[in-house]
Image 1 (cartoon, each protein chain N blue to C red):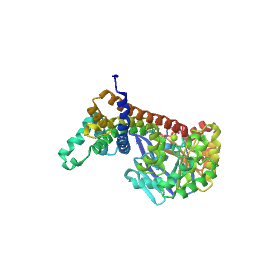
Image 2 (image 1 turned 180 degrees about the vertical axis):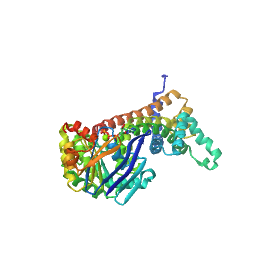
Image 3 (image 1 turned 90 degrees about the vertical axis):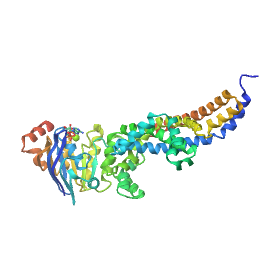
Image 4 (image 1 turned 120 degrees about the vertical axis):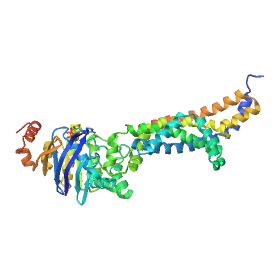
Amino acid sequence: MIKIRGLRKFYGGVPVLDGIDLDIEAGQHVVIIGPSGTGKSTLLRCINFLDHADEGTISIGSLSVDVSTATPKQIKALRLATSFIFQNYALFANKTARANIAEGLMVVRGWSKAEANKRADDLLQMIGLGDKGDAYPVSLSGGQQQRVGIGRAIAADTQLMLIDEPTSALDPEWVDEVLQLLKRIADENRTMLVVTHEMSFARQIADKVVFMEGGKIVEQGPPEQMFTSPVDPRTRHFLRKTLGTM
Amino acid sequence: MSVFDLGYMVGLVPVLLKYVPLTLGMASVSMALALVLACLLAVVRVVRVPVLNQFTKLFISFFRGTPLLVQLFLFYYGLPQLFPSLTAMTGVTAAIIGLTLHFSAYMAESIRAAIIGVDRSQWEAAQSIGMTTAQMMRRIILPQAARVAAPTLVNYFIDLIKSTSLAFTLGVTELMGAAQKEAASSFLYFETFIVVAIFYWVIVEVLSFVQQALEARLSKAVAR
Ligand SMILES: Nc1ncnc2c1ncn2[C@@H]1O[C@H](COP(=O)(O)OP(=O)(O)OP(=O)(O)O)[C@@H](O)[C@H]1O
Ligand SMILES: [Mg+2]
């Protein structure tokens, strides 16, 4: 169970996250939608402490962190409990595909090199890149890079996957293979917090849809309700613009 | 009688050749130490480690802002006056310390620039999987920065090799020191110093060749 309470983040006095309260059940897939610049990425980044929020608490399982007093140890614990999939893949440019997946297991989680490489090779097989273990990111397509990014994020079983617009940097031809893979791993009972503009994908994997605007959660609910009969006019407006319906 | 003594010059080659190992040895040891120190200094600057960052700035400013020769004299002749135990320090040791500190200051700045040039996403990916700053630097950031900084660092190495000639002012008989002694007894200054110049020149040319070969290989291996 993941609980976020009263999360606030300011840039130059301006609130970018303005009191976020969010619950995510184990195994649940929560999809965040909303207009550009409303703090969706910032929320994900604050949970992983890539950005430091100013107020609020983040609880993942038995770990509870007050962000304003977070110690390096707590930050590390949060990072170990979560994994991040980046919009621009962010694979380590100096590491092979295999090493990208094995690196965290080996260096941070203390696996032996043999164990970590074995896990990496199994995952590469699973994501359909069994023959690309020795390839450097630069020689992979965007879609392949993002699949390795997904492999890196599931290499250790974290309690929450943070996924920020996984396909929006991709050429259209690669979008589908990445979404297919994400759907597959979603079926493996993983807990996910996903930001996406791919509405049909959102509808397919979401157990809960959250609409954010202006650093606040405006409305949340099951996908059937959110996509067909949202209550708040701002949600309606956004969906009408995005989906061209309603 | 010819304008200059070719026979003497040819005879000088094997004599001076014996001193090449010391010159290259001093240069290599200084370079290795300077690289390690420069990486530490650069990381301190980039990560802005409190207190150390201020000290590092001052260190870099001093060693870039004063002549190498002055620094060498300061270490070899100056410090033993304050710390008598240092009287035992040999000229070679003093030269290595001086060259290390001097060149680490320069190299720290180019490594720092290269670190800053590494894409932000590389830092974030490393942090997101829970790496410590030291792990991130050593395994992800510095290797990528090194590729960018490599040509500049080789240039500093070339400069460093030539700068070892200053060690003769500390009484070290390296290439330049040996040449100085030969010239003093033969009075054939032009011949002696043209030969020693060619020695340095050849060493640097060989290194430049290696540098180019290395760069070609690097850019092929992982083009970015
Ligand atoms: N480092 C920063 N300094 C100042 N302002 C920032 C910084 N990072 C983000 N912001 C601001 O915070 C707000 C939220 O940004 P964020 O990236 O979280 O939005 P988003 O909802 O993910 O948008 P998008 O859909 O375009 O990705 C924006 O107004 C942005 O300009
Ligand atoms: Mg975003």
